[in-house]
Length: 264
Image (cartoon, one colour):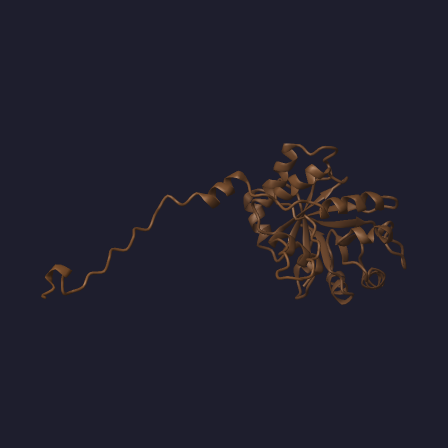
């Protein structure tokens, strides 16, 4: 299974606490995954900024990483971190090379051909979408054999507004796929929790030379996020019994009649 998908699933399910006396401490699970998006590097080089930021990232997607030979040589340089190409329309060759080199992710747009979703493998398939898809279109996209959506929210600058959060929620509430939000800058702590509570499973942010400190701080915020508290409506539902009730079972009677009929 894809390492990125495994982490997304564990975040979605909640990380169980260790049981029993002396149980080892559970692995720290962030509130959301953090995926870096990097530009295509030259041949024989890793993407700019990735080596310094690798310890903060859960995965990396590389723009324009295409061609069998290029993908394979890049895969050899990225073995310490789950990664994969980000292509508008990956070819059969690109998809096969990604499988062969042990890539973890394949990201693409809706303009892709069927090569993006063909083949049996452990790649996490992420398709880039816009937030203005109609219900009919989103149902159709959700029926594709993809694992998640990349929602472009790079237009948000500064504090996230309620309208921004509604844009995220309108996607997450209409699909059972993982939704990763692409951002242009690291959201504040309060915005991170709001995004998580709206159903976002992860963030995608550009990796550049010199922003490793920003990514490290963002990762620390994600790891330090408190577990989501139940909404007031959920708490009420958990404590107030339902409106219906089950009547008590009538007492059983002996076929021989009441005790008064007992003959001494």
